[in-house]
Length: 265
Figure 1 (cartoon, rainbow, N blue to C red):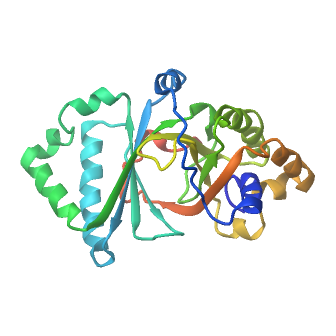
Figure 2 (figure 1 turned 90 degrees about the vertical axis):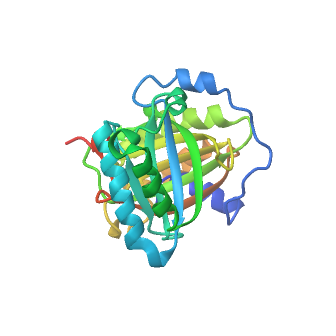
Figure 3 (figure 1 turned 60 degrees about the horizontal axis):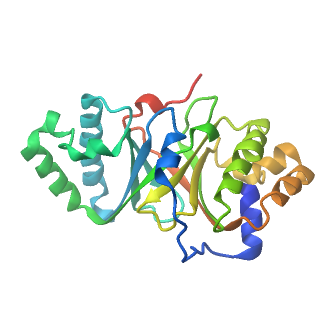
C-alpha cells in the first residue's frame, strides 16, 4: 500500500520498527559521485521541526527563502511536510553540483544582502525547535519521470545489511524499477544519504501517491502484478534488507520553487 511495499513485507516479518545498524559501512564517496553524470551531484536535505503556534510565521519566511533561490537561479528548492509522522516537520531539498559551492558566500546574499539574510534567518530560527541536515547522492538511474508531479508521496527509508548495498542497488535498478514501471508508477526518486545520515547503509526513496484511496486497494505491486510476482521479487532481496521506515509526505508548491523538478507531460 505504500512505496517499496515488497521490501516492507520482508522487513515487517523481521522487525516491527526501524532498527539502525550500529556498524557503519565505509562508503567510497568519489566512486559514487563519478557514477552520477546527470543533474546535481549532491542533494542537501534540511529538516526543521517547528513550534506549532508559529506555523504561519515560519511558512512566510520559507516563502521568502524560496523566492530568493528562484532569483539567484538555483535549479529548484522544494519543501515537503510530513503528513504521517511528526506533522511539525518541514524538509527543504536543495541541489548541489559540488561541495566547493559552499566555500563561497550564501547565494541568497545576492538578492537579500548579508544583513537582510541574517535577519531573515534569525527570525526563522525563532520558529524552529530543532534542525537536521544531511547530504545525499541522487540515483538518477532509478528515476521514473513519466507524468506530472502531485502533492502526496510515500517516502521509504530502507536500511541495507553491511556489504549488501551493491546487491540491493542492482536489485532496485534491474528488478524493482521495472516492476514499478509495469505497475504504472509515473514518478519515483531515490537517493543515498552519505553525510549526516543516521546510517550510511540507507537508501531513501519517494513514490507518487495518486490519492489516499490508492492505499485502500493494497500494495500497488500486488494490485497490478499479482501476489506470485511479488513473492518472486521479494525472494531476490531476502537477507539484504534490515529494516524500513515509511511515511507519507506532502509537497508544498506554495512554499517551493519547483523549477527543474516538475514532471513531464
